[in-house]
Every structure is written in structure tokens, then in C-alpha cells.
Amino acid sequence: MRIDVENLSWGVPGKTIVRDVTLTVSPGETVGLIGPNGSGKSSLLRCVAGLRTPTAGLVRYDGVEIASWPARERARKIAFVEQTADTDSDLRVSEVAMLGRTAHRSRWRGPDATDHAIVEEALERLDLVGLADRPWKQLSGGERQRTHLARALAQRTSGLLLDEPTNHLDVRHQLELMELAARTPQTVVVALHDLALAARYCDRLVLMHGGTVVADGAAADVLTAPLLREVFDVEAEIGRDDLGHLAVGYRAPVQREGGFRVHSG
Amino acid sequence: MRRRKNTLVIVLSLIVLVASMVLAVRIGVGAGWAEIGRAAGSRLGLPVVPLPRLLDSLIWDLRLPRVLLAALVGAALAVCGAVLQSVTRNSLADPYLLGVSSGASTGAVVVVVLGFAGSQLGVTGGALVGALVAFGLLMLLLRRTGLDSSRIVLTGVVVGQLFAALTSLILLSSGDADSIRAVTNWLLGSLASARWTSVAVCAAVLGVGLLLVWLCSAALDGFAFGTDTASSLGVDVRATRIVLLVTTSVLTAVAVAAVGAVGFVGLIVPHGVRFLVGPLHRKLLPLSAVVGAVFLVWTDALTRVVFSPLEVPVGVFTALLGVPLFLLVLRKRGEL
View (tube, rainbow over the protein chains, first blue to last red):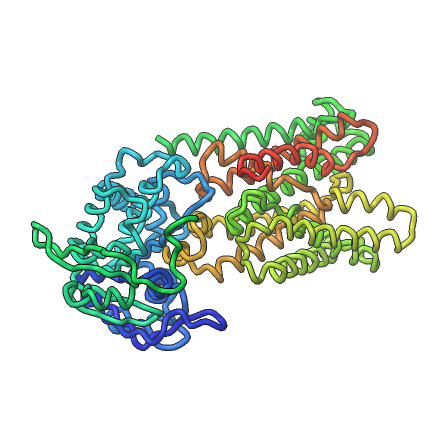
């Protein structure tokens, strides 16, 4: 699916968090959303997912504005994984994944054979088959994250929005997850903190700062030393590793007022 | 395999419910199985010797509606608890602890004091207005933090205390001698005045209400991870919440209009049922209804036997059972 964001702004009373963002994601593309804490990545994703109503501008899926779409229609088109979504409930892994079938099921019947097959496949793709009957409270942070991803895959949507999906994951699962995001035919927008991971697996990077998009393009054009200094307040060196992947070497935080006081005493 | 286990649990619990109700009719009625058989037989037109009119009336007009009403109210309150716990994402939510039952009490008492005590529909209407006002007040107090705030139970208790005080004030200032006894009934709940009209109203409303909330099962499951995830799963959060909260208000109101504010059933029952069949609402809701019914039938039967000949409101007993469980849940959540 194609996603268009046009002049979108969103905020809470007294504070604009996303400011006049325009963005296009082509079908099948994997776009990495990067930027420091508080740059508006999560809020933008929520607007694109249709969970927040923009104060200005609009979002289109395949050319159709989504403002008046029922939740059910939206959920068949796009899936969203929050950064942290926890519960007190004692749902099992397979039951959480089955939540992804909510928008495809009639209210009158329980999950049928098709739903079970789709959930089974999603669990397989995220290496969760062995944990299918494990209750939520007994899962590690990474297992919970993967369960949410399985749930999102079970939604069988053509769009996928992920907010910091590699949080809590060990290195191996981080790489596997990004591989999955890059290879899936789905259109993916993924917010990431790890710049090297973003550069390696995303077709395109969108850099946010203060609620606006400050750079949008190929990794090599977005991850430049001057831009990183301006946006992230770090001195960095951009190079290539042995495999030819873009590598980011951080030198030091830029000296400025208001940073951490590194030395004690 | 798991599916078959669930069907088995439902069938077994229904058998337990029917057996409990038959036993409960027998308990404390002062008549043996033969008399109950004769009473039932003569109603069904079988060729049996009818009972003396007084005993027949005792069984048919007092005991049977009382047992049926206990079952219906227990089912309604248990379902309300299960729904509220999902919507508020708080395992301590229950119509009584959130103050909705107390609001319904106040509404019902106002109608009674105004002189419409004879009309079950009038009392139920008053209770419904009271329940909705209490819910409205609760949401108003929580408008900043949202319905799934951890403060909801604390706020609910405050709302409940306000309405309990109003109920006492209205009843005591109405001045007649029976009112003081009525206070305990409305505030604690008692099945002593069960009649066929309340049974009919409760049965009809419970049937419709249970179906409505059961159709929202998938949404109730989706609420587990909060409103954003629920919405991204395809749940219309606003509309579903309104349907669920209005339905629980109506169910609570009907229960309270019939028997007063019985507490803790909605807290105790769903916790036990989750333990049996897990947290998915397609199974949790119907089974909570059946187990809630069994639970209140038995607590009511026990209050009749244990304190005989004293008539102790059944709400006293449910509170005695509910408070330790409340503390247990608090402890499990690390708040005690």
C-alpha cells in the first residue's frame, strides 16, 4: 500500500508535537523514522495509524483519506505495534497473536481454522512456536515484543507501523526482526534509535527533529556528520564496515549547556 | 482439546447451578422433598394432592422467586465485574466498588420515598438513573487521567460513599418506622423481598445484556493492552465503551432495584473463573454468569441457615468473603 502524509500537525493543548510533516511511502518500501527522544516519531506514527486525529493536514492510504474510516477497516489495512504495550491479564502468546484476527472475525463466532492457521504461521515467523502456551507474565521483554509483532503479522495487512520494535531484543533477534521488516512485501514505517541498524535495513530514512522532518532520503544522504551534530548533538564519523554497510562511530556529545554532568564530585 | 474442556466446564457448571437452585428451595423452607414435589406437581397439572395454601404460597411466592432472583442477580453482577475489569484494565473493578451500585440504590430509594414503591419498573427506572449519574460522576472525576487510571477504584469508593450517605439521609428523613430497617436492605442488599415481577424484569434484562456484552468479547480481549492497541486491532474504542458501560449500568440497576446493593460478587467470581478457563471473554462471560448465579444462590441459602431465625442481608455475607479476596488481589499487585 501507499501511504501519504500531507502537511500533518498534531499536538496537545499548549504544545505542538508534530509540525507540518509531509511524507510519502511507496508500496513495499521500508522507511526508517529516526530522531532524538521527543522529536515526534511516536506521535507521527500514531497519526499515520489513525489513532490520533491530526489538528491539521491528513493521512491517505492508497490515495483515500482515512479520517472517517471505521476502526475495523483501518485494522485490515494497517497494523501498529506500540513501543510498550503491557497487560495485567494472563493471556497466552497464541491468544495475544489471535487478537490480530479481531478485525477479520464476525462478532458471532470464535476463531476458525483459517484464523488458527494464520496465527500459527505468524508465531513461526517470529520463532515463538515453542512459547505458544506461555502466559504473558512469564515472558521476557523481548518475547513480549516478538509476540506483539506476531499479532501484527496475524492482522495480514499491507501496511505495518513499528515503534522502536528492537527495544528489549537481543542482537540476534534485532537483526532477524529488521531482516523480516526489510523483506516483507508489506509497506513498513519503523521508528528506530539504532542508526546503523536503520541504515542497513531501511530503503529510506526520515530524520525528525522538533516535530518536523529535517531530512528524507537514502541513508548515506541523511546520516551525515553535520546533520547528526545538529539534530542529535553528537560528533560522529560515518564510514563503511568490512561488509560495506554504513557504520556510525560516535566521538563525543557536543559540548553544550544542559547536558548530563558526566564527572561526579 | 481445549475447546472440549471448555464445553465440559460450561455443562458441568450448568448442572451445578440447577442442582444448587433445587437444593436452595429446600433449605430453610420447612418442607421436605415430598411437599416440594407436590407443589411442583400441582402447578404442572399432575394428579397429586395439592399442598395447604399457606405452604404452597410459601414455596411458590416466596422461596422459588427468591432462589431464582439470587441466581439472576449473581449472574448479572459477576458479568458486570468481568466487563468493568476489562474496560478499566483494573482487576479490582466491580459495580459496588466503583460506586455504581450505591448510585442505583439512591435512585431506587428516591422513587420509593416518592411513593411508587409498588411499581417494580418505576424502582428499576430510578435505579438506572442513579447508576448512570454515579457513572457520569466517576468519569467526570477521572476525565484528566482516563478510565483506565489506577485511581479508578479509589475514586469509585468516594462516589460510592457519597451515594450511600445520600441514601441513608433520604431514608432516615422520610421518617417512617420501616425505613430504618430498609436502609440496611438497600445499602447491603437482601433477597428477602424477592417477588415474581423482579424475577421477570431481571431475567429479560440479563438475557439481552449478556448477549450484548458477549458480542463485544473480542473487543474486551483487545482492551488488555490499552486503548491504542485495541483501536489498532479494529476496535471502535469509544462506541464499544459506551455500549459496555451503559449495559453494565442497566444490569447493575436492575439487580439493585430488585435486591439492593450486594457487593463483591463482581470481584470474586470473575477471578475464580479466569483461574478455570483463562482470560478470553468468549468463555469468561458466560461462565462468570453461571458461577455468579451459583455463588449467590449458595450465599443466600447460607445466610438463611446460619443466622436463622434472623434475616441477615446477603450483602453482609458477600462482603465477608469479598474483603479477603480484595486484599489478596492488592497484595498480588504489590500494593499491600
